[in-house]
Length: 357
Ligand code: F6P
Image (cartoon, rainbow, N blue to C red; front, side, top):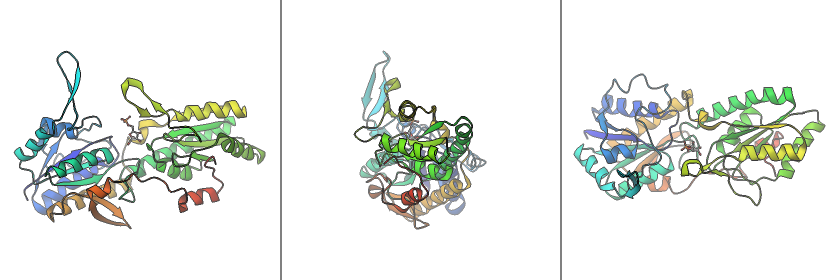
């Protein structure tokens, strides 16, 4: 084996640079394999924006957030957005260009660092004969085959810090403070940060909530002398009989807005002043935690190991504390959501947290 390609797709996430560093350095140091980096995810593969990433470019990036390669969560090679001279947008299948560039660069295989969207695209390329290794990346922690994705720990740390800070105003002003966190249709960030930050009410997509139960919890707290409450809401959470809230600004449909709705509803129904904070992309930014740096490094090294062993079309994952490979098809088959019967949720309930039920 002489050459591997690497690209980072989907939303940025703390720890991607640690993966790029680990892949590049371990490929070079252990196997003398060159690494060709494609900029901006699959867009770079389609448009052949690629370069030889050496030791120098892979150095000094372990602690840096984002991705030095750039990324996009819009450019699907099988439905590629093309803007004509008249400004009109059309969509074309450009997967043949991507395949040609894999050939032209003489790649033995491609390492794709991505979440479920990018790994699903990667899987389509495996069906067209491109050898691929996937590395799971997402702050949402919603990939079924791995116990944890890198980026999640950093996002949880940021959200926990936000909850700690919101306590100050909540306590001083005797308010309800609502924090909306990311996570798409999984409540992992809300659950983990809610527990770590001592949130009083945690609302997750896996358990539709009931306003009456949320208000009851707030009243119980007040009767015990706790005049404030912290509500942590996952962006994908919704009330019983309702559905997730989306923002449609700019034509794109994105989850978001449930925090403000919950805040207004609680203020109106309890008479207690309430404020909403949307943590947004702060959860994706900044330096990765030590845990994420180490996990990203282990994933990057394991991806090169799988490639050199010829174990293609696998995704690296963490299972039972061990890094191994699982078939890519299996890895993308199911989104990992919180089991309402799980021990962690029961532990939160045991210490008096409410899920609005
Ligand atoms: O998947 C990561 C994530 O940050 C989600 O938690 C969130 O819903 C989404 O991406 C936001 O995407 P964008 O950066 O395109 O607004």
